Amino acid sequence: MDANLWLSALALVAAVALLIEGVRQLRRRWLLVKVEGVSMEPELRDGDEVLAKRTRTIEAGRVVVVVAPDPLLGWAEPPKRPRGPWWVKRVAAGPGESMPGSDEPVPAGHYFLLSDNPAGEDSRRHGPCPAGAIAGVMIRKF
Image (cartoon, rainbow, N blue to C red; front, side):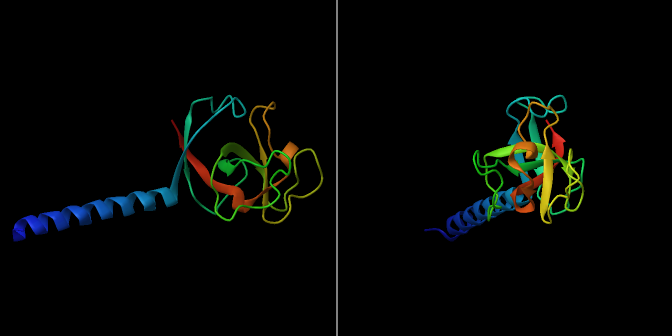
């Protein structure tokens, strides 16, 4: 094999490897989720897409992407590594703050999440959400 052809092939393999690693790093930091259903109307509609940034800084009022709870157990235990299916909800209260409709505080390491549309499912049914189940905070909608 010609030396130039060998170097070209090696450069192509290196470029593909760098591209794959770049995409992997982007996926670690960012998450794109399609909104399904009407639970976040009027701000987010069925079919909208939400770009979320993975972060540990979560404030009340922010919209988050969260692992959907188990239908029977709720958010019983935080997943080791959040993976879908995803829900999009608004943070109503953080650790130590009063849960909406109650004088009880949100437990440490948990958040109380609400749908913008009262008909949606959220922490009122499934209980406070462990911080580990929150995958990211919405940065932008499309």
